[in-house]
Image (tube, rainbow, N blue to C red; front, side, top):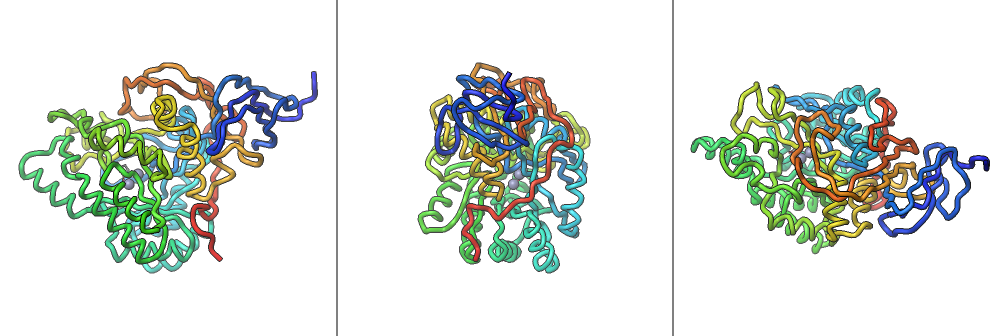
Length: 472
Ligand code: DUC
Ligand code: ZN
Ligand code: ZN
């Protein structure tokens, strides 16, 4: 038997990157890709990928895990169950949020979040920050210091009472992003419009889950998207608008791009595969399962999202996994009761289904190319948040984070998923593919059975986002 040259060789893969598809063996040593070629020498371990597409492991750049919440709400997934679920769906890097509570120091929020991840994460992880209280201390000291330490992206909210910033505060934090080379992510919905509509709906007794979508129509997202663009233009800094839901917000982003502004955008599976009808066509409470913000729109908007994925409008495709149990006083039934939509925690699970949904309906459904799939789910998110080329691609020197795909018919069943949430919004959906294998730094973490281990995931310090202009 020939002496092993590699720790692992993945043989005869149809390797897909954001640029190409080609047949090759992949040689792995020390958790990294060290050779790509034909007829590589033997590995201590060999995986036969003949005829199989092999993509980079997914980078889910927008998910919420064990994020401290106001009131009774508690996220169902911590770092253990969330990263386990991610691995089983082909994702090998997650970027959840270290969220500053108002009155809290940003550094304390980061320390607390590290404690939540440590010993639990099964795949590698970085943190975005959420800035909810931009005090002078945060703006002048904490945020610049954290950016320099590898937390190079942060999210700001234009809605949610416990998170939202006014326009002046937005300008202040955007200015920090510009001066220190961070990526600013913006949740764009107009808080005052939402509150005004919510009160009117409540006064009319319209409090069933489906009215969540009535309280957050496209207009409120469109207005806030335009305002975010204007604020970024004033400061002269790139921004990334997260969870874009449909046509009118897309039009604002196209307008910005046509004026030469660096406005990036993200969308999520819920805007391709759910509609407002999933929040209920009558007053049934089950619609609470699909309450997220912005809400899913109508069928016609789904096509605008597909078009935006295809033509470069969107840079990133993330899950916005925000896991709350349905039948749970800490979840979608606050205090154990069916509640008015205002009180239902926003968010749906999606870490494990993100890649299979897009691969099945996008790639195998003939809507996007395999290259586009890799770009949106791995390469561009890694570039947007300073993790490329370590993550997000198949190249010499990159971590051996790989997915071997199995194209077969299957039905999504929550019972077969690995998160800790008691439902999936995609229950019963027919898919055409699922990862046969997920490798994280060369270790098999999913082969039809979860093989990961709590605590094997490593914290990743992010470099300056490579999508941003270089700073001199
Ligand atoms: N909306 C958010 O902004 N964050 C988490 C989940 C959601 O629906
Ligand atoms: Zn958001
Ligand atoms: Zn989110």
